[in-house]
Amino acid sequence: MKGIPYVQDRYSPTLDIFPIQCSEFNRIYQFYENLKENRLTTTKCLSCRHVAYPPRVLCPQCYSEELEWIDLPDRGKVLCVVEKWKGLPICFEAPLITAWIELPDPSPVKRLLTRIINCGAGQLKEGSEVRLTVFDVDAHPIDKGKEKFMKERVFFAFEPVQ
Image (cartoon, rainbow, N blue to C red):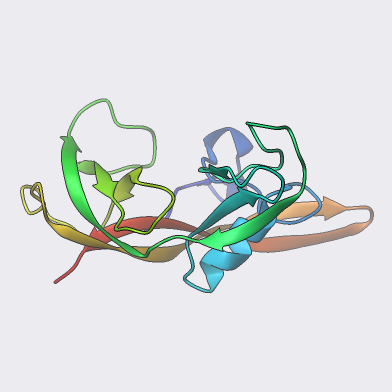
């Protein structure tokens, strides 16, 4: 379950759909650190209490930078599902399944549009229960001064509850 940022053993940033996930290059790197702990999180403004998803570095309501990380539910119910068979982004196999899911109360984020994995065609229906799953994606090469290293990365999707 990976994207394919390598073509003939050469890294291609053009084909890499996953973000760089380290503090030197991404101000929401904590989101990815939380994913590594199997926690789906977002930001909440400490000034006006607004919850923004996806997470932000600045409150979209009052422009404050005083934010805290809050946990979101790791399960939800499918509201609408789409199976894409043609015109897929590079590196994805058919069917590419996406769904609007409803997160249970008292979640401050009510709905999410997300990718669904580990699911066969036609398996997911309206009302199906899904859960968060975190998966590894290819490491990203980082040049920091004279130091060069590979940064391990993760991303998330949801999968049907069996």
